[in-house]
Image (cartoon, rainbow, N blue to C red; front, side, top):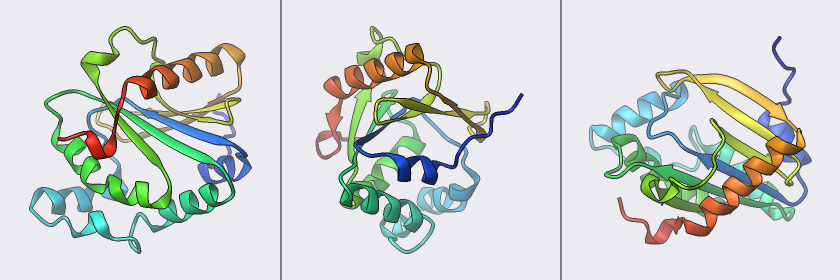
Length: 174
């Protein structure tokens, strides 16, 4: 039975202290960024610096959330050498940082002894988890929300362990 899941924007708007995001895939097949990714692969990286295009709503919500005191951190576990998609993400990360996110990268080989959940997630205020499910080809498979104490504990400890080991964006070279 499908859940009635609040939108991400609603969940972030309700957030008071912290929102942490763990990404663990080496490629995503998000339809909204397909044209941008193809242009980047062809040598046009102008969209990676575009504050008014597709990413504007994300950058605005991050800026607003950080402005009201929410700490937003994103950690990415990546295989090395990195995939073309991860190079694309890395190239666009400066806009996330400019908006107020903190971003770190962890080579997958350094994550082998960390207990990780099976899916990417957001953890809001250390109390509710929003899992991002993906299909085999990387398209969105829809979200799932949990506030079960064991789930929150797993995601909180996983993020903390990854964050501690991960390399700040400015120091991670792809």
